[in-house]
Length: 138
Image 1 (cartoon, rainbow, N blue to C red):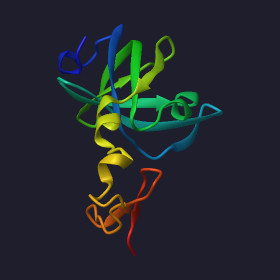
Image 2: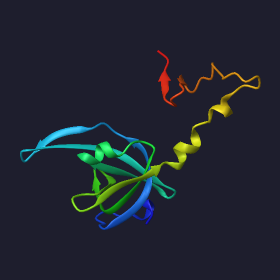
Image 3: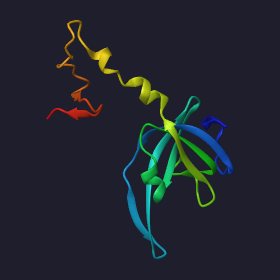
Image 4: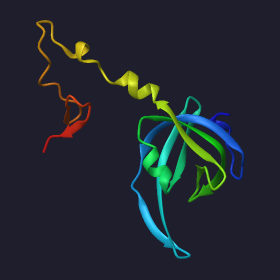
C-alpha cells in the first residue's frame, strides 16, 4: 500500500517508507501512566504522512531509517492525517533510507584534483564534518 492511498479511519494498514524527520519527544501522564510520544514524517514515492511514535518506538526509529508499519491505523489530528501502529501494530526498521545513502558524497568525490579535501565547502551556512553531520557557523 502507498501513503497516498491512506484515508482517515483506515485500519490494518501495511506500508513502507523513509523517515525524513523526527520531532521532539513529549512526555505526559495519562490515567496514572507516564507516556512519551514523538511525531515523525514518513515518506514514500507517492507522498508523506505524520507518523506517531509511542514509548519504545521513539528510540527505535531515527531520521534516515527505512521502516515498515504493519497493522497500523490512520486518524486525523489537528486537520492532518496521522499514521500510528497502536496497540496491535508494529514498526520495524528494515534499513537505511535510499535517499540518505545516495545524498551523502563519498570522500573520494569530495577530493580536489590534486588529492586534497575541499576545506572551504560551505553548505547553506554550515560545514559538513567527516561524520556527515552539519555544524552551524556561529
